[in-house]
Amino acid sequence: MAETAAKQEALSKTRLRLWLKLLKSVNGIEAEIRRNLRDQHGTTLPRFDVMSALARFPDGLKMSELSTFLKVSNGNVTGIVDKLTEDGLVLRVAVPGDRRAQVARLTPKGKAAFEELAANHESWIDELLEGWAAEDIAALSSRLDLVLKRQSQEESGNAK
Image (cartoon, rainbow, N blue to C red; front, side, top):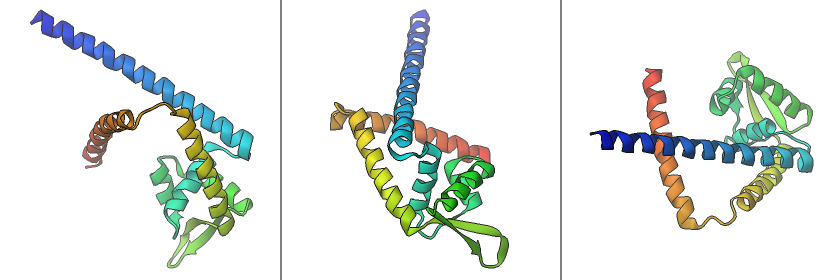
């Protein structure tokens, strides 16, 4: 019985160390991506994230849908969309029948800019994770899918 408890405690500590390594890795990668976006493109990760979301929805997203999709506040999204609109990268369109709602979508200039950013983003990630074999990626990805599935189930349970 004591041996089982000791093994569980050791496993718990191992999981904690894994989490700390994951966190440090993700924070380091994110810092590099932020630096590259700033230095090479004069933009920010939040702007990239908004453009990425809008690229996935060519017909656009309502501002509330965009903030839900990105899991950030409406105020944060509004400020970013305002700047992207000023730069000619995003267009706001009124929603017929709803005077208060607007849909944001990428302009042709925004699509072209995002395609360049996305290609660079992919190459940065590829470079940062160089040395990982396909089977290592698949194994870690499947394990992380378990974490994401559990989070999704918990979110669904909390929404009820």
